[in-house]
Image (cartoon, rainbow, N blue to C red; front, side, top):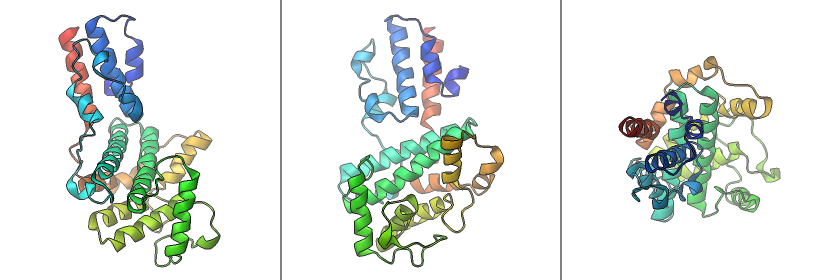
Length: 277
């Protein structure tokens, strides 16, 4: 139970016997779903279908995920422009990324929390810009990022004026679409659309980037410490984020304050084990 409650689904899978006995097969499949979901291996979850379960019925929690069932509010869904299907995709995926960060925070894995939060932040801004420009920067395509950079240079050469960015730079000579510039562009889009929810979310997220005034916890720096210097996160390094309830405020704006999918999943797994074994 300890492994499951702490999201160690892969370790739990390794303890299962190598057999296709129905109950073992079902347990292995739902544990695999948990493992993929926590790592946000979205495409691989698509392969967990009826053939993976002995009773040929995919559990509801997996079916809902595969159908991208939304757990956010309509205000959050509607901050993303474009077609309804794309809005749903961006809302679903960013909501899932936030739920991963929340889970790691809840179980006290602070380094994993920071990494997951950093991914959520980047994907939120990438999704927001993609949805409003039609240029997809949610995928690894440097050409698309260059297209967005050129768009900013052409339409918003004054984008840093009046922004909360600490050190202004000449965007006309900038060659990379950095996260600070992505945040600044998102801020401009949100203000042009006069969308209060996106404005408020972006303001909260700027408080987690060292390049902006009012930053209370530099998530970007902490992420780099983990990735490049092998230094884990200490509780005092994120204390200001916790004291100001940044995650709770974002949760409220998105409408996911009661959305804890991994705890629901863990309860289902434990109930299944108690019933079958």
